[in-house]
Length: 471
Ligand code: 6PG
Image 1 (cartoon, helix red, strand yellow):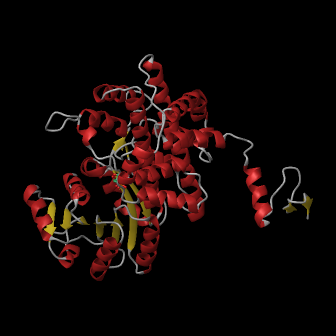
Image 2 (image 1 turned 180 degrees about the vertical axis):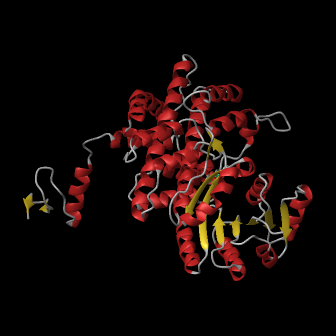
Image 3 (image 1 turned 120 degrees about the vertical axis):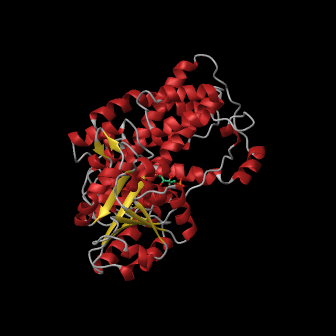
């Protein structure tokens, strides 16, 4: 008997996807470099659909042709090594799917190399963590459309569903699936950063304890902010350790990362995209990791004394909620704008409505408000910035005063809020018909003869600014 799909890499994501697929009545061959892991999985989950293999050759030969192999190993060299080890046993038209958090340029390269050898390659972003992998992830597959069509039924079955629709859709050619997953992760960074900032403002300025904070997040989760990340924050706040203390208060304040947020920002810089919230979120993780320096600096550098706000906190909490929602919207506006620019550059023809649909369930950034993004792109497929859509425009105009207020209070009290401040700075810059960039252009021309344009005449100009003489 031959199996329908093979999975290489039995770390938590690979294992749980294998279980998910097997639970959905597909037969699955599994392989891991160290056989111990494979044996353990089979011992723990003795399923008739799950078949272990201990050499790549046996593993590949166990599959129905054309073969379909899902690679779930570490992004980078490990993925290339696995691909190289599989290739000798493949036939033309066999399909490899990379389900890791691959760098999209690697996916473009692999797609090119494998297609040239007659194989199909799909780079699929898979989101939802270990639980999502097991119960239904959001999937962002990019690559050859014909190959995608072959596996679509299986992806539909194993993915999360939202309003009955599977959270998977063909994204576009070559690296587009992994690019969209990368931006998803970037947005994940800014969502988390914004939540962390408002948590800190509530805690430091309003002196609200974890129990109460959890209730506030629970309340917020019932409204516009309804999302997975708000929900888990509510739980995290009140989790106690073995000594009965709130565990969160004992977690070291140094945030790690595996690079996908950084890639999103690097791409933004390459594409001339003002992706300020995600980038601030990446920087904040870096800054948080300078714990030793921060420790020293905290004894050397001074800030203001905090003016605690104890009374009338209800109004402020609502303003904080509004600030969080508006900042989140602004971050998505930036993220989707970047997707648009990348889509044009790489000719991916991304469908933003479909992407927002995929994000609705299964993935880490799942949130009710994605429905609003879907509606915005339904109304206008060519929307250049979601802030310009009537719903988001109205929310922005309504909530901007709150965001201003919260940013001001936090700054006055020395509470760091880089993403919230980036949100209002972007908002004010984006809505300005006139910016002081005229001065920057004049300075560039002054010291470097870089030329400038005028608002009243066509052409490029250079001025000898010292003598006020135009050449
Ligand atoms: C997901 C997550 C997942 C993972 C990130 C974490 O969509 O399921 O984004 O991919 O949690 O890689 O990234 P950092 O370690 O960089 O925070």
